[in-house]
Length: 148
Image (tube, rainbow, N blue to C red):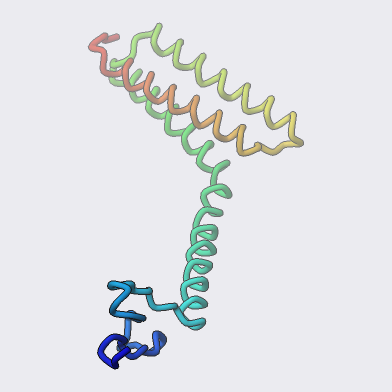
């Protein structure tokens, strides 16, 4: 074998050398550069930091859930009252919406009674879904061109 048949191996850890070619006769078999330990640790640390930050940002949303439920109750009651005042809601629509709000309130009270005064995440999710439904009903009733 002559010296031209083989390429000199280069150190794959050196930053200038991204690839190592072993043998010209074997074709262009290239091997990717191995990451060094420091780079691997930096990637792992970066991912861990992202997970921790995401978790820390998600906690306040759960903690505020009871406040959000109460704020939505008040907001929806204000929307119903505004609809009555402006004449956008008929007496029948108002009664229907009030019954729906009362149902959600009774359901929330039962959920709290079952869990020593607390709402589970599943309870909060169910109440939120029902409040979304009531919000759509309020909007539809206020914008259906029926006047008091």
